[in-house]
Length: 129
Image (cartoon, rainbow, N blue to C red; front, side, top):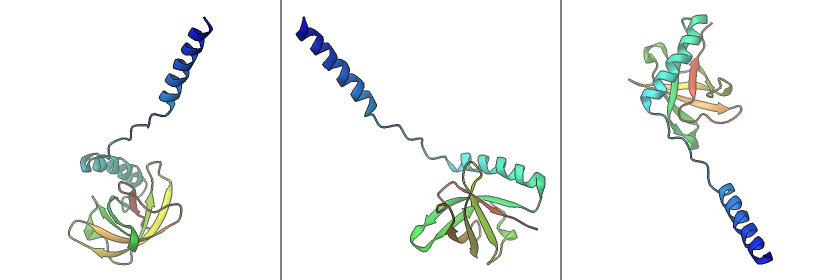
């Protein structure tokens, strides 16, 4: 009887312990279409306040040089030296930067992390006075 009780407790302990050790599944990275939809929502919110604000998202990072590529923006509205603010998914500021080059479909920005470096999918905003 005691052996059976101990065996049952041992099995229960292993099952509970095993459940706690399982890794959480990570979400798949958003597709460019999903990023564009999210950026469109943020863009709408900011442009209701000021039509001149430009909003895009980080699509590539060169961390060793503190450079990011920002896409889904009207590149004609940017020039070298423009100031950019980066925000996370909760719209908290995380970094600042300056445009270093404007390409056909992207803007390259040298950033300074204030909270953390920008990550792929973070929002980039050009505020205009």
